[in-house]
Image (cartoon, rainbow, N blue to C red; front, side, top):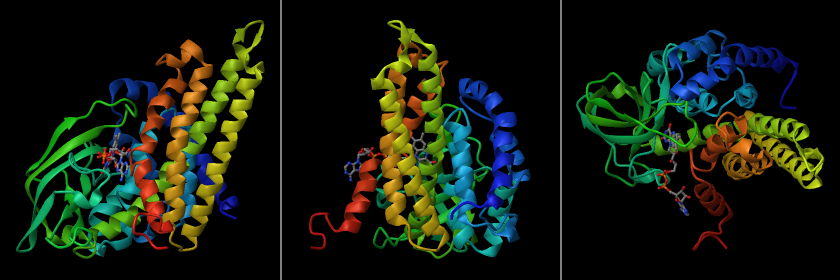
Length: 385
Ligand SMILES: Cc1cc2nc3c(=O)[nH]c(=O)nc-3n(C[C@H](O)[C@H](O)[C@H](O)COP(=O)(O)OP(=O)(O)OC[C@H]3O[C@@H](n4cnc5c(N)ncnc54)[C@H](O)[C@@H]3O)c2cc1C
């Protein structure tokens, strides 16, 4: 059993916080193209939500992954995809590797203030020339005495214009591409870090997304997470939580889209009856609700396995793939039943249509998920018979 009575209280507090402190501001933040990350994260940090499954020594709650999953699912009640994503970057994308593999000193310096909500974190993997092909990144961190000197650039970095530090994947050696990388905590105020531009996007509009350059940025070697050369492996571990988070956060968001569509089509008359009374509409909505429930089962199964300490690469990859597919299908199907109103920016269904499109691309595109699964199944050309 994944959830117990112990999950009820934090769930209720988070639900209340979303309704009182987030949803009333979402339209304003979406219009502004940014939300106040430091202000919001401090409040979430004070409530203990930025470190539910992080070690207590660094201010976390020391709970198991089921609490992080509960949080990801509840964030789906926020009236946009952008703010949940920014929070997810802080809790489940930029900090898991640091929490697991970072030195005590490094966790005190970067993890503790991120859990407290004093620091905003971001994760720097993708580059202008390498997104899906993570092993092909070009940013380098050259050894110079006790320091690394970092040069290169990162692209599409969520929270990038507001972040205090970046969990940066870079090449620290010349060897094989899966064994020459390291994850390094880089303060964004370091000399040589430039936020080249804030990117204009189709959706996720209140989340800031940056292109960042690193020009001979000097950081001490003690800022490296874990062992040199293990960065690719650590990032693959970190991706498991990122991908499960992406699948979990869409569940309630999609249910809200279905419910809003039921309400709208029940009230909208056409040809002498409510739109909802057409079987093609209510059957389709029932089918979509079934898809959400199926995805939820897969996500919960993966989370249970993670709590049990198992490798969830296959289940998390499948969940991310299904979430990506559903993110394209569900808002599109629902938007259709809103007619012209579905095309208006003032309706949540149009925002969901724009925001949900990212799930099939960010954190590894659908095709990358299929590649991982094929590798595990041995069906790639030359794979095991
Ligand atoms: C809003 C937003 C926020 C993001 N936030 C972050 C962040 O915080 N940190 C970060 O590091 N990155 C972030 N990203 C980057 C994101 O993870 C990448 O965009 C994603 O991994 C895909 O990489 P790419 O865009 O370079 O696509 P490419 O690698 O250029 O691939 C393009 C397309 O080709 C197809 N494709 C790729 N590989 C294969 C294959 N092997 N077989 C068949 N088809 C294939 C896929 O359809 C893919 O979408 C963000 C992106 C966006 C849009």
